[in-house]
Length: 240
Image (cartoon, rainbow, N blue to C red; front, side, top):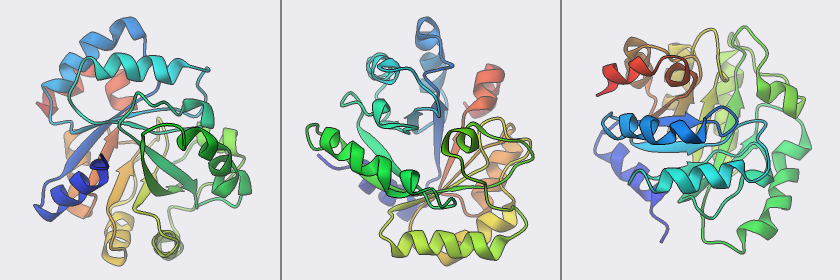
């Protein structure tokens, strides 16, 4: 049943803000998953994203299978490669790196994924993925060989997001990258949100509740937190 995306639309229609925690299989100790998910379940987190830029074969499937036993929250694959696709999840963000011009990450990987996706029952959500510079090189840059967009060129970011919507993407994801030195600029979030008609995801560099609400107040429909919870799980206390 295809319901993850519709639930996101319903939440936005009722003016509810959504919070996703991004779990990288390469960084999460499977033995600590139970304790971590227990904290997630008592927080305001609404979605679980699982994936990373560099993940060993089968690690995503193993972690997703474990997480599904520990929570009723929707689990969505955030793939860095075709090998991270798993039928254990509820949905997949079908990411197209529209901030770059590397054909492999605009369409190449997607074609390779189709033979696997057509054999499993996984809700596919087309997502325009826009990487924004944050002051340090990200894993996404290294793996894809693409450059992030300038945080100072807001008009180009806005046009890129709208182009993604025109291409049929159902979500736009503004990403500063894992461990970003600073989050996405609030003016950029606001300008993108005013221009597009589809849900907006914002992630990277958010480490405090103040930054979280700043992103929401600027127009983010879904905020993604990853590194902040990996480095300081006490952050959960602010999200209960």
